[in-house]
Length: 179
Image (cartoon, rainbow, N blue to C red; front, side, top):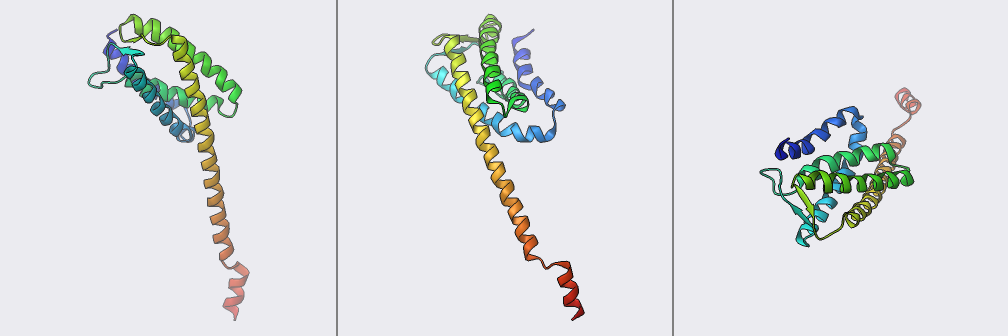
């Protein structure tokens, strides 16, 4: 398979799996997926600047490794949180396994063998530890997001209660109409 087709497939095909997920779940976990993409871009940019990673090929006309950050990374994050959010212990175990598997098998052997990606100034083990640290950070971000949504719902419910309290009761309306 041509490397360009492979990379474009990694960018777009994962998004098709979201047709199997509830729309509300996608909305719930999209912010953490975008935050994960942001932190991954920062890691990749830092890694390239420090000489940790070399990308032998990119998705033309894009210049970055967007094929896996905005495709695989985002969608995998949504699915991980869909199945594991609320149970940090399971989340971190699965995240560690996926990080080590992705970096050792996919980055080193598959993409490295095709000349797409090479780790030169960093070991795959350290790279997997960085990815796991990022996983903890994005989990904390989702907890913070959930807190925001809970506060928003409380405020919305409070506003509804206040507006209901400000309305006259039906029997008061009837008494006012009789007088």
